[in-house]
Length: 135
Image (cartoon, rainbow, N blue to C red; front, side):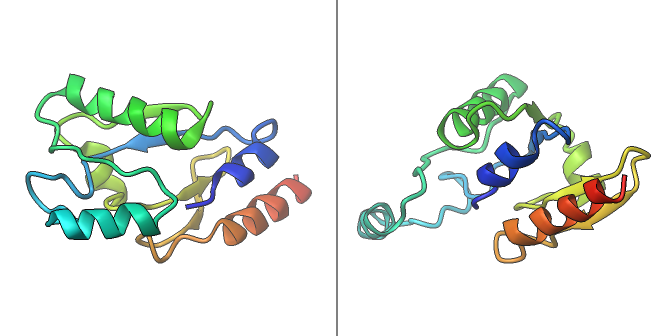
C-alpha cells in the first residue's frame, strides 16, 4: 500500500487514522510464507517490511503489533487499536484491509473495497481532492 503520500498531501485538511484490527497473516494461523524457502522468496522479492507475528491474544500484544506497524509503515499517522471483541473489524468489514473516507457528518464518501487488491491510493486522492474543492 502506498497511502503515505496521500496522507502527507492531505493531513492538514483531513483527519487520518489507522485502526489496527486482527492480524491478517499470523504465523500461528494463516501465514503466507509457510516454509523457510517461501519466506526467503518473500523477503527477497518484497520491499514491504516482513512480519513474523503470532495472533495477538491480549490487547497489549495487539497494541504492540500496531505500534510496530506504525513505526515501519505509517510514520506519524495516528494509529488506534480495535478491541479484542473486534467491533470495528466486524462493523466495517475491515479485515484484511479496507480504507474508508467519511465526511464531517460521518457519511461514507469512499470505500476501497476489500484489500489488498481493491486498494487504490489514486482513487482516494481523487475523492479527497473533489471533497475538499467542494467545501
